[in-house]
Structures are given as C-alpha cells and as structure tokens.
Amino acid sequence: MSAVPADPDDEMTMAMSDPDPVELGERRRNLRRPSSATVRLRFGAEAIEGRAENVAPGGVLFFTEGEVRVEVELLEDGVSRTVTGHLVRSERIEGERRGWAVELD
Amino acid sequence: MSAVPADPDDEMTMAMSDPDPVELGERRRNLRRPSSATVRLRFGAEAIEGRAENVAPGGVLFFTEGEVRVEVELLEDGVSRTVTGHLVRSERIEGERRGWAVELD
Image 1 (cartoon, each protein chain N blue to C red):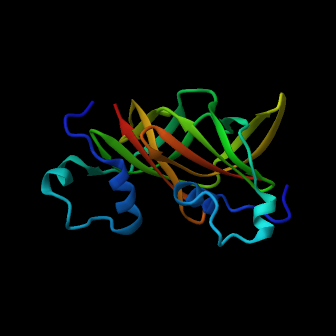
Image 2 (cartoon, each protein chain N blue to C red; image 1 turned 90 degrees about the vertical axis):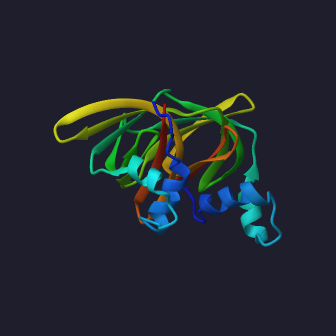
C-alpha cells in the first residue's frame, strides 16, 4: 500500500513522549496526517497461538512467531475504509489508555 | 485468581533482557514457574474500537480506552485449562518473534 512506509514503532514512541518532535523530516511529516477517525481493529486469526515462557497465578508471558495479521476499519467523515496489515505493538500508556501501532500492507 | 499477582510488565522486560535477574525476590521466583505450554490467545471482543491519532500510507496509530479482555488456553502435558484476563502488552522482540504479557483475573 505504501512506497514510503511510515514507521509505527517510531510513531508509538512519539505518541508517548513528544507528539511532534522537530527531528522528523518534512517528508515524513507530510505523509503522516493527524486523524480522529474511529478505528475498529479485527484480528485475522480466531486464535493466536504461541509458546509459554512462564506462568504465574497472576499472569502469563508467552511468545509467538510470525506476523499478527489484522484488519483495520477507519471511519472518518461518514466514510468507511478497510485496510489490512499487521500488529506492530500494543501497550498500556497510562491507566487503561492503550496505544496500538499497525503497519499497513 | 491471585493473592500476589505477578507483574507481566516486569516479566516482559525480563524476557527481553535477562531471563533470571538476581534482583527478583525468592517469593516472586517461586510463584512464577517456567512453562513450555502451548498458548492460545482469543480476544473477548470481535473488534477493538478506538480513535486514530494519525494515519499514513504505511501505518496507523490509534488509542483505545479500557481493558482488552482475553481468554488464554494453556495446553500442557495433555491437559488444557482456560483462564481469562486482559492484555498488558504485545510487542515485537526480534524479527517476527513477539512477546505477549497477559494479566490473569
């Protein structure tokens, strides 16, 4: 979908630290546009399978191999478009606010 | 499910840096046991809805509010048990290897 892919890793870091760091090149800034679209994320597989690393009464840590395919529906100004990609990162930012970075195909 | 919940945040950090840091107290170490169980993760909601932060040809960054409920099936030594909890973190570690931290109810 992109000739010059954005770097969701970088964007996630930005979002958590500095929403508009001066270090970003003009070209990158022009490609990325702010959006307040409603986003619906769906996972391509019904279940994501992996291997546990450790298990405790309060938590499980496990690892998977391979891309986690997702479908992203963007609803903006009454228009819906659906794109596909893979999950880069999902993490809690503060409280129950959570950031999701998806790289698009 | 736990009187002394494990801290998946901490475990994820451990997994990526040091699998058995000496700083961990004996009590914590006893609660957490290594496991090679097969893990199947399922999301409680069909779609996870949030609000975009920015959109680029190559990626989407968005935020959600609230717990991301998950179901975790652990298959070990021919025995399956299913537990519920919420996603703490999912991130690429190297290549397509990905770590998942789930806090259990």
